Image (tube, rainbow, N blue to C red; front, side, top):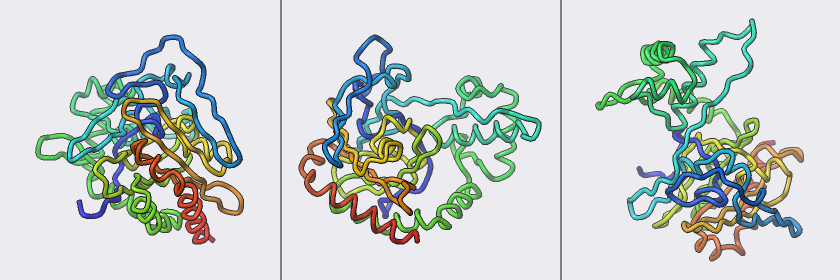
Length: 300
């Protein structure tokens, strides 16, 4: 696709620092049996290491890491796709319920949901089948959604223009788009701009290195913050978060916060095969903090 950065929303996932989440197995759904509690975090100075182990959050919300892919030599390896309904705010007299449901539907579609089967889509979104059909028809008529040659719905140019306008007006997004490709190239790791959204993190940018095997987390993907390196950085205020997994895929990740007036506004995260992470481990901390400082300097 020419440029290796992506700005199109695709998936929702549950972890970026372990391709299938602590204790998971690539290609298999998690299970809810008994097991040890949340993985222990050991901090030494500014460095935090996540020891591998089945975390309670993974057992309660099985499915591993939906949406993240290891892409090798043109082949995609999908790992445990799982979709979760996005609950809207409490409905009150001031809120327009159909609009809230429509926004939930768009977010579900952006996370990889398919409306090809209305009954299945209604079950996954919690929107009744009749309302779902009307919402899809409305978005289609409004130019938010369109049908491809196979009849599947996808986001239409009007939606893409709105997304581009939001990203283009963001100093954070503009600064990150200039700096993060250099981090990906220098480390040979997939590099992401990540922000908090309630209890989740959202992946705002993705920049891939020219490597034969990369971590792939689609822009727009969501994850429980506590299960990801950038989420823990943003929640806990640590200067660097380092995560390892004992998975067969062998994926590692690290993240550092972007500070503005002393407060975290987003995080930079890198992820990739554990062998690649180990090979550049000594340079990761410096690269992340230098990039974060450069982005912060452009925020004013």
